[in-house]
Amino acid sequence: MEVVQQVAPLSMGWCLDCHRNPEPHLRPAEFITRLDWSPGEDAAVLGARLKAALRIQPSTDCSTCHR
Image 1 (cartoon, helix red, strand yellow):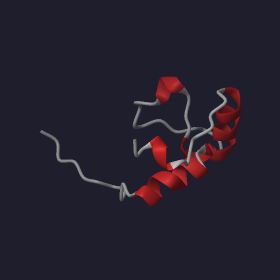
Image 2 (image 1 turned 180 degrees about the vertical axis):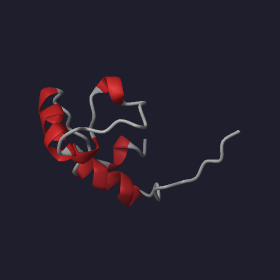
Image 3 (image 1 turned 180 degrees about the horizontal axis):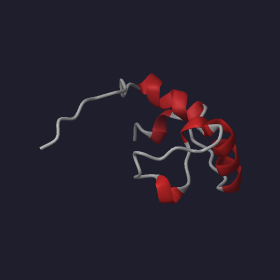
């Protein structure tokens, strides 16, 4: 079995940072599970296009996660 490690804090602040600024973290759906994927251009620029095209509007309302 491979050894795994936690590379992010997984805190509420960490989640909210991404919800407030998702562009650098977005990728085309076909590459979501490809850990070796690289955007080939500025990730924020690609993410902005994806956010607009897919009408992504991440919620920062508490009830998004705390239901």
